[in-house]
Image (cartoon, rainbow, N blue to C red; front, top):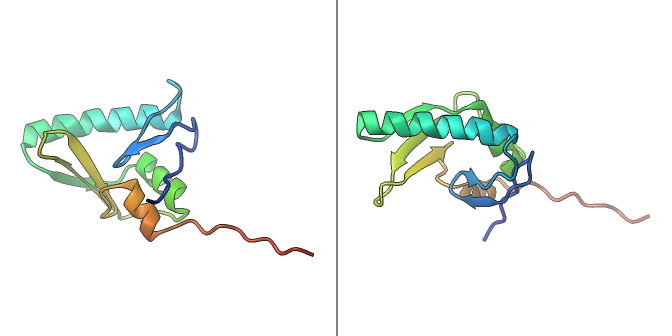
Length: 114
């Protein structure tokens, strides 16, 4: 198991996939993620199939918070529904923030004793 950091602004815990339980209604990421999720759900219903779009700035920020690395500017997000019909996002080829953390761990600082 690879621990996923909390939301960088409101410190809400990671839930699953690329979702956090944002603690404050004024959380920067909550507002942007809610808008993205609504637009993605509408587009998924209209198309009736998975689609790919450029990663959003909020997705790039959450990637950075998880991995300590910038998401490439050309990174894409694939949105699709799982078997139960719930929508899911795949950011930078990762279906889950936990997978991204596994493959791109943030180095732990080491301190030398004098």
